[in-house]
Every structure is written in C-alpha cells, then in structure tokens.
Amino acid sequence: MQQPSKKYNDIRLFLILIPCINVINYYLTYEHISLSWHTVLTFSIDTLEGYLAWLLFRHIIFYWDKKLPFEKAPVKRIIVQLVTTLFGGLSVIILLTELINFIASDKPVPANFYTTDIFIIA
Image 1: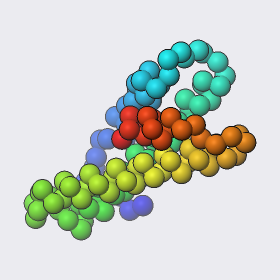
Image 2 (image 1 turned 90 degrees about the horizontal axis):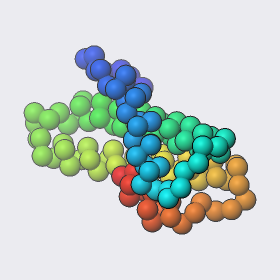
Image 3 (image 1 turned 120 degrees about the vertical axis):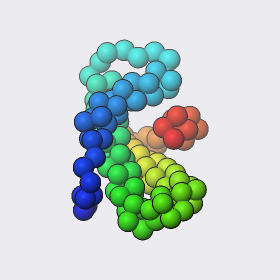
Image 4 (image 1 turned 90 degrees about the vertical axis):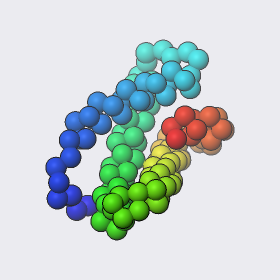
C-alpha cells in the first residue's frame, strides 16, 4: 500500500481504539464474559481482525483521496467512502471469521454473528 504524502496521526489512536471498541462489542454481544484462555484468544483474534479491517479502511480512504477529493464533490465522496469502507470492512471481518472458524471448529459460525454481531460491528 502506498503511503499518503501527508502525515496522518491515526495509527496510534486506532491501536488503542480498536481493542476498546472490541470490549464494547463483547459487552453488547455476550451476557456473561468470564476470564479464560478462550476469551483471551477470541478477543485477541477479534482485535487483529479489527486491525486488518482498519488497514483496509485506510487504503480505501487514501484511494478516494486521489480519485475523488472532497473538494470536487463532498456529498458524493462521503457517500462513496461510507459505502466502500463499510462493505470492505465487513467483508474482511466476515471472511476472516469464517476462515478462522473453518480452521478451528467443525461447526458453522453461529447465526447470531450474522443477525447481531455484524450490525454491532457496522
């Protein structure tokens, strides 16, 4: 990924925010959370998935900065950016969740991932 010509200070912010957002997601998703190796492992995997989705967000935003700057069409840019980052980020989360579940389990991803979790993540 080509880095932008300007310096952005979002990296340190999101290194902290993504785990915090993940904590909120766990709070909203699960009724009972116990501290166990399974919780730590799933939290770590979910956080890494969040970092990968955020890297894709950055790439998409930098792409649109070059192709459709805010100054030319601000409303169009906001709509295009929202749709592409939402679709791209959710795609990363869904694909990685399915892949990890396929590797680690013989059961399908729980239905509440698609009925609840995805909406919380979005």
